Image 1 (cartoon, rainbow, N blue to C red):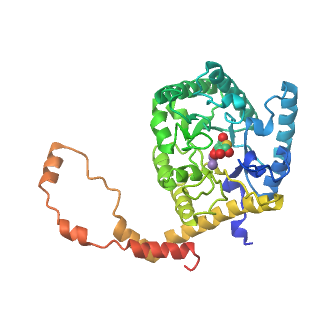
Image 2 (image 1 turned 135 degrees about the vertical axis):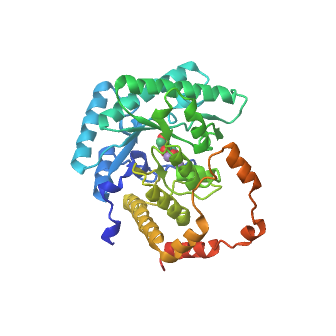
Image 3 (image 1 turned 45 degrees about the vertical axis):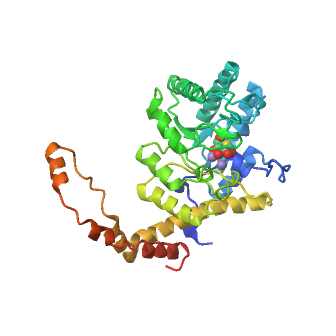
Length: 385
Ligand code: GLT
Ligand code: MN
Ligand code: MN
């Protein structure tokens, strides 16, 4: 294995506790792997060269733990993080596992459920802050419906806004300095989830009291489930200054949420994603929200985690090769044009534009050489260029 693909802390690769500790349970089958205690998961991540571990409150602290139990667990977990050189960049909250959330959490009809969801999130924020997390992810897995008879969907939007506003105030009051990252998904576990895509959140965030505190956490699998181009969603989030976090994995369209190893399903899409992140200089965590196939034991889990990081680094190298390829760059230069705007509007400029003549047929007749560009890209990805 070449050293060039050895993960380093500077690469900011992180995994959720729920990812490498995933036991392979699915709706039709029992777990296939024994539980992996959180401190052992941290040891495994350290051994693999990962930089960070992320967690839901209840990945670490059981929902019914007493305050004393919680403190012991947290103390030992911090020691494990220190011992294995692993940091905790992101924390989140499970607002989907417990039966109380069967009708949603922040958007549930019962005000007691909504209040409990906020209380639970505040304690998860306390936990994350204690572990050093600076990003707080909110994935509204249960915020959705099977039947729209249950509530008006705009009431759900209002309730979600109230909850996020509350949590932003808590963030300020506690001095935590979290950045919230909202994660969209079109469906699963609900029939339909309200904030179905990253674009939905980009529309929602400006309606908050503290929009500057809130961004997005797009996930490859989730946009792909919706049939969308993930890199386009990421690019729009980046353009809006809202790419606070990212969930890398892979997914075939038209399937259940597969959460495959990064690059496992569509290495070509993964290439364009990595190229985008590296080209723009995204410097946040590269978080793998994926899990090993159900066929695997813990050796397979390690192969899975190594594979996520290694594929990212291979694609990063290929992106650099693409950028340095003279033939590719010549086509890009000839075909891409530039970002120069049409110009600022003024009455004079508009009159000039209205009177300009365009050689429409000549412009339209020009070939753009994208076939050649794409083939060269394919050859880079396939390793022959
Ligand atoms: C859950 C979900 C993920 C979210 C996690 C954060 S939990 O595994 O499938 O996409 O990112 O809540
Ligand atoms: Mn997923
Ligand atoms: Mn995710």
